[in-house]
Length: 113
Image (cartoon, rainbow, N blue to C red; front, side, top):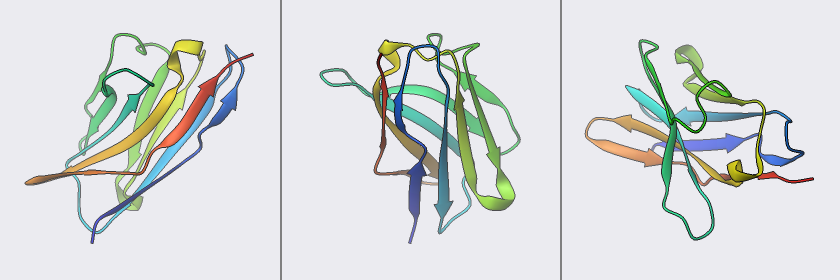
């Protein structure tokens, strides 16, 4: 049974940093990613990383966020720096193992002074 467990969310001031972690179990995942969903908005891709390390970022986070993964631990990380109020959202871990997508329960990130 596949499980994705996120951690690391919280409240941070503008300009601050947070690091999210997602531990996946139950399969081997070719692609792992972070999405976010703010109230009243559609879910959007933040960043993704393939098993070989190729990464992709949303334009709004490029240069501020870094996605990485530890394949041995089946864990994906999202280092978020220079956080802005508009980064406030529930952040969800996503992992793809053919032919299915799997989702974590989400972790809240709030950027506010």
